[in-house]
Amino acid sequence: MNPYIESFLPLFVAVNIPGILPTYLGLIESLSAGGRRRLTLQAVSTAFLLAVLILFAGQLIFSLLGITVNDLRVGGGLILLVLSISNLVFGDFRRRDPKQGSKQGPKQETAEADDGLGVVPLGIPLIMGPAAITSVLVSRQSFGYLPTLTSLIVNMALVYLALVFSPYIGRVVGRAANLAIAKVASLFLAAISVAMIRAGIVAMVQAL
Image (cartoon, rainbow, N blue to C red; front, side):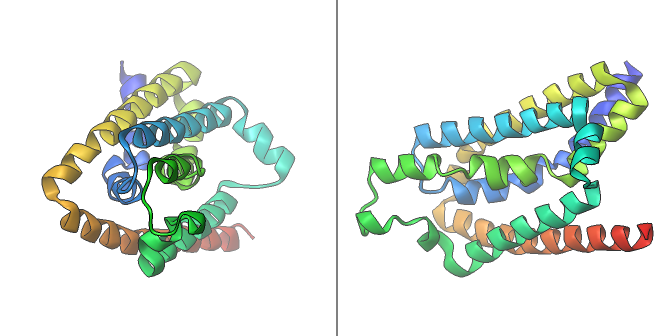
């Protein structure tokens, strides 16, 4: 069981479920229950498919494209930085549909649920970011395919359960506190994105 446990723990830390939840709660705040389910499934499916692709063909893909994990750090950091600034400055205004004015109907909720937020930034790079991708590659090299795949499935199941039950936490906390948490999370997300960009650039310079 040691290879499975040793493969599970680094990926669990890299995925960082507590760090995902505040941003997720901020994104689903105006969605219906159906929209939340679609967004959650889209995010976890995207992260899982990317991780499986990296597990079995990561080195080949990196070689063909001529990229490294450090490139992913910088690119993912830029995406998160844009998202965090958008959340902090514009808030819910960026999700409003100009064609529907101030109405908050089911059509808008469905549109918000299907606008790709589950793919970027939730699936990539929040759930499966550079740290998680690196963990998958290192785990495959150290423990093999089966322990890595098992740990990946377990981690994605935990992420799914955490996202599914997170709205109940939001209801207990309340709308005002939920919005405040989302703003604070955006601030920390900006700091994390800068750290990712810095780490990627430093590693690139050291590799020269």
